[in-house]
Length: 272
Length: 353
Image (cartoon, rainbow over all chains, first blue to last red):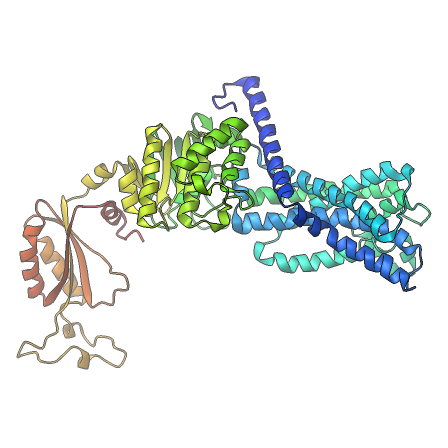
């Protein structure tokens, strides 16, 4: 720490170094807590997609209500769902609790780092957690379905979309966690969460909705749709999908807007 | 710590929450901000600790401009809030160690410091416990220990002994005194005059966002007229012993219980009370008389504080005689030295709470 900071670039470099150290220490704290609560973390992130995969991919298929290839179509969608939802939950709930009740975040806001970096750490951690959770879905999928759609050529796009989808979830979480009043979080969550879950094209491909045009418009407004569609482009390109380049542009644009509003909201909550 | 012309106006608020305050606190000094709730103490501390954006003014901590360089300021200060903000996912010991890590303290050094502080604050055996189970007093101790992990130059404490039992309060006060011996500057907000008088080298009395007076506790009290006080409580006599006035007070009240005339209870009506105050003020040696509104006053009784030059007990006999003349019965006497609360009453005409 440059406690006796002099002037000029030496002091600036010291402060920057201090901020990096503080940022990494806060990240280390989050990783430490996740590690010490590993079973809780796994249950939290795996249970929901596991059940969706089991019921829609396995049970309905075995009973003959869905065609065999539905599981192949559903799996990439569930990867998208896991990435977005985990990113959002990791950020939004704790943020509301920390700002509203436990005030835990205060110790980090008073650390020698820019307030924006505290928000950035939360986004980074939520993104990492969402990526881990989504990756876990691959072995889970193999266990439940017996086999999953896989193309090595699709892996670069898969990884890119995994990162963007996790970031998207984190951005949505930051937005909700900072803009929603603590006493309304329950209502807002149920009002936002369920529509987000079912209009994100994770259970059906977007082009097939042309038979239901109004719903196609609705789903086009959900940025998660573009995560689901590019996941399918990566793993099951034979299923009609939105072109990946369109998805990437929409995702990048959504991220910029979400982060800009979310970080402003964070500043508003952090500094009166 | 230097503060100059600090102002905070919240959006849509009709008045400034903090209205142009200035003070300087020397290294190693204990500085108290004393005032009732809503006086602007917490907002002031919020601005000085980078959590509230000021509307105007300057503040420096250890030479660093708090508003231009909040990151540099945060390295030099620490805050102990009134309510626990401990990290509930971490043990007490890890609360201390991660706090040090945020501030760039090397790991081995942080571990050694944590052990020393935990033992100093009587928490060695509870280091592995999570803070959920802790009482208010224990959380407070942990938060002070945590604040000291990065060796701040200035430590802010918000109402440090609110909600603590007397033993815990004394323990915290002792630890705070040790800190000042080590050269740490303490800035504490309080509405407890005993705390301010016990701990603070200097006290700023705040009300409505302004500093009304700033001096040592002794200096503030010496500015008061009178060197000792006599607090008298009295109530109106029931007039049944007097042959000419055998009616009791109750029957002549109207249906609402309101007095039908001031003559019905001559001792307690406002004009009678003013006359009594004037008479008390005219007694020899009396500097000043302040009426005190008893909480939940119903107009029946009178409570006054008489500031006396010299020996207050000498005044009891003439005061009792005066009360009798005004058909009042003495219900309580308290002799005291002026306190910071008297200073506050003198400055604002109100009690602190």
